[in-house]
Length: 363
Image (cartoon, helix red, strand yellow):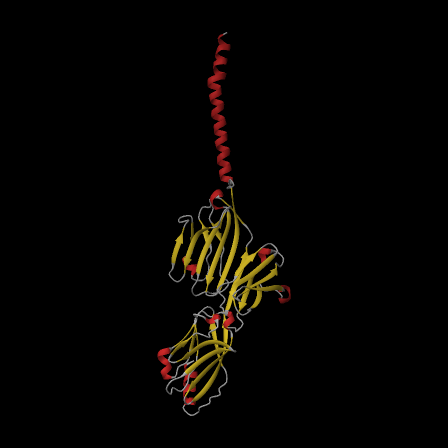
């Protein structure tokens, strides 16, 4: 932008009529945006900004004029008035919208002549997140409030033939012109065999947002025996957050959080569950349950690892069962029952059989 202003100033020093190719500016929705325009300052100036033929902003008699301004731009435009005497006619456009996209003209008029500069404004709404949902038959990725339409790609781990990853993608537009894009893929074979990965790639290729998910096979473990529930990030992450949630029958409960940047851990199940701090640095957020209980720890565990423009989810159902009796314990129980039976027989002999025997002998 600064380079364009310098070029304009140099050309204006030698020409009264300047013909330049259109400048291209890209702005992010809903941020503020500057459309550059420069002229040779020679006394008073008249400035008009247009989008096609629509009045956007005017300045003359040394002040802003809003009488003809289109209502779409009402309250959203201003010039840098203190810089106008120095040849700066740039327009500040606030809270950029999809509808602002188009070709703008900056018209300036001084006693040295008139000038027209054209600006092509492109707008984009960044991909903020990708939501991934999975059923037994389908996996769906969606993203909201984006513009323009991104490219959606699918992959699996382990890899699958690309032709088996045919997906259906639909888009819808809200009243602001922003898009919701949803892509659906049919599950391949057994649900737990693959990690499903979807990527949303911005139209200008400057942004890639990736989500992945794996529903693992259920884990069964006896109560009282230590259990590890796996969760490993598919890629090396520099800064990430880890969240473990537990669902039994109601809403999910956050039982553990970890932030790799601060290395801060929140653990609701302190003493019952923990992470391996050394493995965490390698992207392994597996959860260790020390002595799982049937009633307290049977349910669905969801691990979410979130990094910069990425999210990985692993879901595992855990079933804690009654502990089985070992052979040693069974031998101890048999010995105990044998001893108890012998004691019972001895007591029966003393209290019942022996007195009857004595009476019979006396008779």
